[in-house]
Length: 275
Image 1 (cartoon, rainbow, N blue to C red):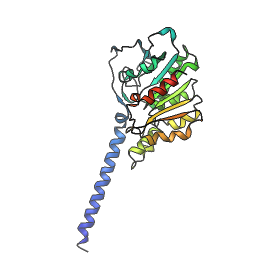
Image 2 (image 1 turned 60 degrees about the vertical axis):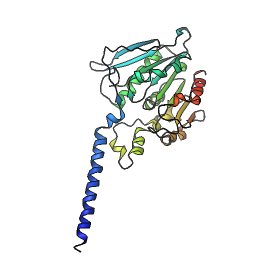
Image 3 (image 1 turned 180 degrees about the vertical axis):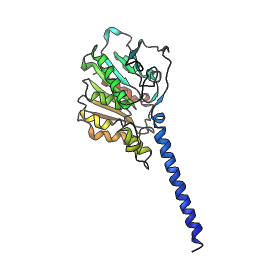
Image 4 (image 1 turned 90 degrees about the vertical axis):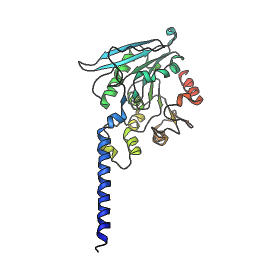
C-alpha cells in the first residue's frame, strides 16, 4: 500500500493542475472574448478618409455620447445609379480595411454604404449586439429615403453576415449576399473550444440561423473550403435553412480573406449585380 501512495498523489496533483489550467483558460476566454471577437481600430473624430472612389463621410449623432460613422461610396457615373449595397463588414479594423472591395459593386452602378460598428473607426458607444442591429436598421432607413426596396442589396462579410441577415429578416430588399457566414457565434465558439460550455460563456450570439428562415428575398452565400476562421462545416449547416431559390456557392481552396481573388466569386457576383 505504501508504494501506491506517491502514485495516487501524483495523479491527484496532475488532475488538480489540469483542472486549474482548464479554469484559467476558461476565465481568460470569457474575460477577453470582446478583444477576440471585435478587433477594432478606432479613428480620431477629425480623421479624413483618402479613398480614390467618390465618397461622402457622414457622422450620425445617436445621443450625447454615441455616434454612427458611415461612408457612402458612389459609382463614377452617378447619373446611372442602379441602387445601393448596404455593406456590413467583418470584425477587423474599420471601413479603411474594406474599402478596396467597393469597386466590385460601384462598377455595376451601385452605391456602397458602409457603417462602422461601435468602437470601430469613428463610431462610438457601447458595444452590444442590439446596437449592431439598431445601427443597421438606421442605415437602412436612410437608404429607404433615396432608393426603392427592390434596388437595395444587403451584403454581409464574416461578422457582418449576422447583422445583414438580421436586417434582411424584417426589411424589404432585393437580395441578401453573405460572404463567409457562420451558423451563430455560439456554434463557432463551440467548434473552437469544444471543452467549454460556449452557450453560457459567450456574450454575443448573432444567431444567423434564427434570422435566415425569415428572409423572404433571394439569398446567395459564398464560402471557401479552406476557411480557417469560420470553418466551411460551420457555414454548411445553413444549407438546410435555404429556400429553393437560394444558393450556396462553394469556393474550392478559398480561405477566409481571399474569396474575391477567385474567378468563380467574381463571375457569380457580377451575375448577381447585373440582374
